[in-house]
Image (cartoon, rainbow, N blue to C red; front, top):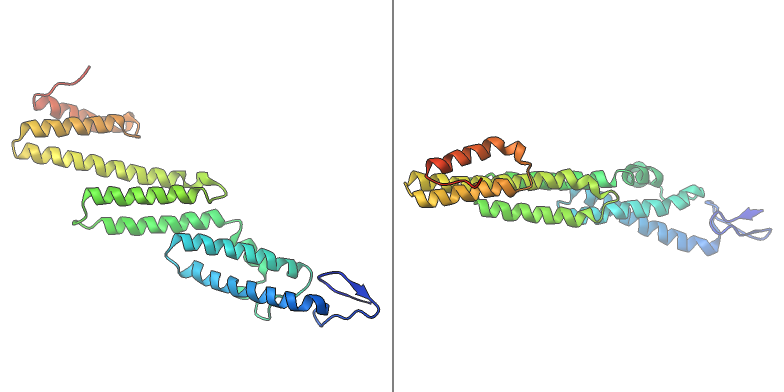
Length: 230
């Protein structure tokens, strides 16, 4: 007695095709599988080629979603295609992407960060632009964080960006102070050294890690006739 693999209906006069699907389910299943396979193939290509992380995340989620839906056919013994996606059945694609979703996103974001850093290393790039661009990257990370299954995986990444921002801001202040001192502009130099000291004492980095820099700034302030608060 024939029985449809999808709807489960059966009977003595009931007919199914070579894949075990009844006429009522066949058309819907064929259209659904074709649409999902098309989206899956497009998404696999875009995940590999795109440089846009928002597109990457959207397509990554589509891969997971549609491979999961196609697995329902696979589990019932219904072939999804003569040429399985990436020559792998939907279950293999799902298992390759779903558990590592957050890892893939962090790797993509880190690659974008490295590309940004390389572009900011040019001598013509100002400290202001470096800080602005890095802050944009930090904001992007915070937005993406809300889309992760485990948001804490981006904590180290964000700390790395913040530390670089801090270093740029401090070095910019120090350079301004040194330039003013070189030009014998004692008042301006002293003001900038004070500003640099205040920055170090109030940034996110533990002062114990910056003791040497803080000590040098205090020595310089005293050399220029400044006073330090006790």
